[in-house]
Length: 238
Image (tube, rainbow, N blue to C red):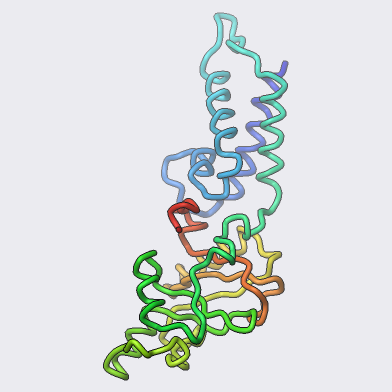
């Protein structure tokens, strides 16, 4: 019976998710519900929720002889197999990243006040500074604060390059940033943000280039909200 196969494979899925979330605080929700709220599940979320409802129908409802009230279709069984395959395979981090061409950025010759206005409008606290096809630094509100303390203000003629060492990535006392290659997975990025949280040291963003080098074009950027359960839609980032 397909119902028995479906329930058996759903238990396989639950076992995989149990291992996935082992050692993490889970509250009272099931691992399937937890996965449904995880950004990683987005590509299969609708199908998984449908499978979950069907599993509950098969498990909690039966006729007088204990037989399931319905029989899953072959298409539903195939869907469950595809979900299991999806959960098994590592997901490229770039799937969850803001594409490089859509990342708000600055250039060394840009007027600093203009960049700051764009950052305020879009709600960003930091943007990469791009130069000669690569990332040359980070323009951040924390850097702006330090610059104002040193110079008394930011003028109309102040350029991004004038911030000097305040643009350096991972400078002492600044926010932390991580550079990863295009082969990085969702789990690599998530683990990096979680480790930073455990050490109480803020990792503000992860930047992805082809080989994880600063002199390469920016392929994507991820923030904690992209992988830790509060993922914004692309429209919300615009």
